[in-house]
Amino acid sequence: MATKPRAEHHGPASLFDLTDRVAIITGGAGFLGKEFGRTVASAGAHVVVADVHRSTAEAVAKNLSVTSTLEALAVQTDVANKESVHAMVGMVKDVFGRVDILVNSAALDPKFDPKEAGKHKQDFEGYPLDAWQQSLDVDLTGAFLCAQAVAPIMREQNRGVIVNISSIYGVVGPDQRLYEKDDGSKGYKPSSYSATKAALDGFTRYLAAYFSGTNIRVNTLTLGGVFNNHGEQFLKRYNVRVPMGRMMKLEEVGGPLLFLVSDASSYMTGANLVVDGGWTAW
Image (tube, rainbow, N blue to C red):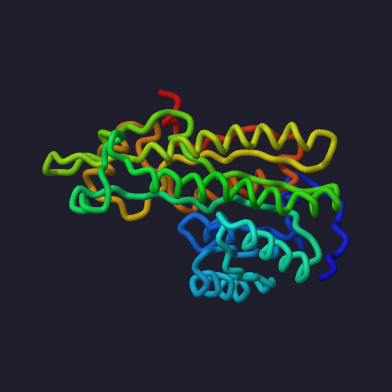
């Protein structure tokens, strides 16, 4: 699919224009992925909803196509599987002829519940190896495989942007007090979550340096907690830890992402944009 010539910039607002650019969003049918897709589509990009859940991805892509009048493509993709990733990127190249943006948003975020003690132990000492490995496969190896697959296309274009989605728990340790239940029982954010999110930022810096001399930019977007129908007790505990006194709203994740994938951040690579309401300031 041929793309139209891009107009020259005529002011700051035009820097955010993504007209006819092609953006792959992994985990594109997920809570954050859907918002990322909506954001880049609203700026003019064609969106590839790459997700392991086919039917959900197709529904998201259909909705994007209707609301933005742009072509959105759903591709069932297991980011932890090399063949699946390369098949997805090959399909994107066949349909659109290019890949301008990769957002590595696919991730596992297990929620521990004392009532599910039979599934696995909650403390670090009892955390099962297979759960650790699964998180590494999806959260970290998935980003590696996707970046590796789009790199030749971006090199050929001499242009591209990769954004790795991370968390404040890749910057500071989790406050496990947040996950205590009303009855005093303990829950935990798992060790694999922090390890993979911290590693993503190191991977970002590696790629930024590796692509030196090209027009391929790689950055990390680190987000604080995004409200998703959290319970009242959790909110109280979370909010007192944040200078802004609240969790992030879903609609607030799009602006930072758009900044990083657009020409508005054209002199930015190897950086970590932290959007956390001040969580890491304390």
